[in-house]
Length: 67
Image 1 (tube, rainbow, N blue to C red):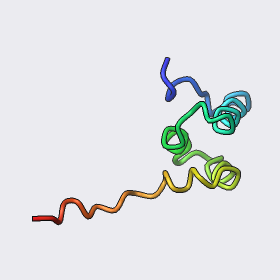
Image 2: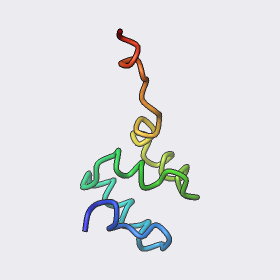
Image 3: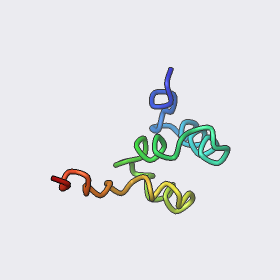
């Protein structure tokens, strides 16, 4: 079971487990941000863990313009 499928975000227990995983650093911030994207609790988690906000912004696509 990978990091993406091990958190049931439709249950309070799953949200608590994700909260603990983020706080303990046992899940990558990018993975956590991807899991939370579009979820009703996304803003709550972003407020609690501001470092996740850096992972939610789309990357600047300056690499494709170097011809």
